[in-house]
Length: 96
Image 1 (tube, one colour):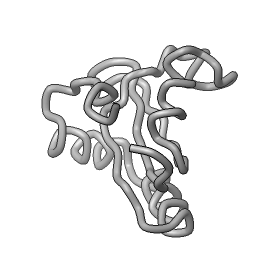
Image 2 (cartoon, one colour):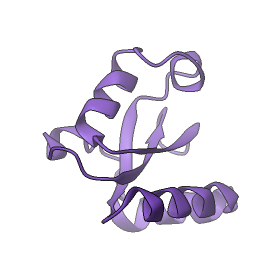
Image 3 (spheres, one colour):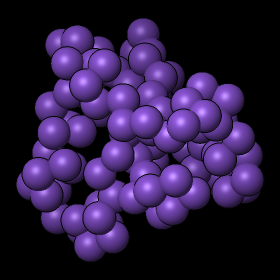
Image 4 (cartoon, one colour):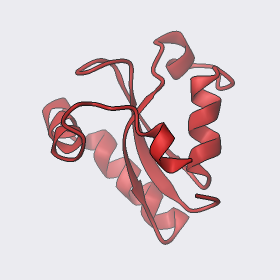
């Protein structure tokens, strides 16, 4: 998976702290989070598990989706994750 716009959710653990991001290179960006190359929230709260992602045709649509997801209630985000990844597996290996 090379460059393609994507929205993603990282979690610290099952039902833990969530982080929603957008990128044009999902593999690289998640690697950066996992290796604490991204200062800030994910580093501070140990949020490194890729639990959900969605690919987009354009960065504009990915940004719109990210903004919508950020506005969702926490329960809706948990349901989105659990509908697609009920065991909260780290999906990083699947995108390599």
